Image (tube, rainbow, N blue to C red):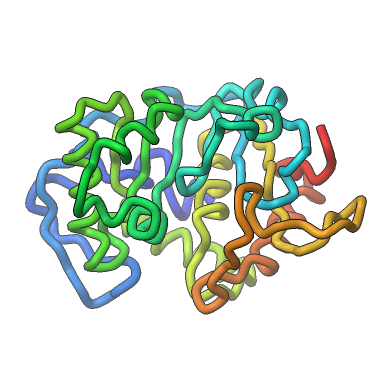
Length: 264
């Protein structure tokens, strides 16, 4: 994966890999190009070549009542997806430590009104993530560019310590090609498998929590909500969660990473 995708150096747009004025191709709209301005995250976003232990936290309902919070927070670096809630009772099960968090357009649009109105509630909601890196898909689709820019400007204007950065569409295209070569057929990779892929390059020991795309618990067989905080279903036109999970299960069986599916 490192030799084909180069996530450490290319996952995030920087001045080094995408100089100002570069023409880049949207990874979701292959024929559409954009010219980059200054990156919101000029230094290299990952100061360490590798972390010893990393936790990638999905948002699956399997985390409900899991008691995995302390184990997640014990990891040296914690990656989370799509601005999940971490407080008001969730701490015990999902932890609060965050080094990197993604923010997809759906969350930004539905939960925060695309930042077209008051912006302070959005910035206040980010406080739980501290000074973590926030990855935005600014160059996946044309509509996501102005939205991601509004997020970055809002964070700057209201002086949030969180650090906005943009996914590099070249990396996302390489990542999609890599997983296709491994037999994964999906219209578009989920944020979860993108972050697992990045963690495999950044971390020596990768642990996954909250990755279970099915409606019944694997051990207790009781019914689960889709997410640990709501029951909104995945759009199957874009993501193939069971197929992705099968790939992760294979990596678990090979000892490449560790899937946590029981209570902690």
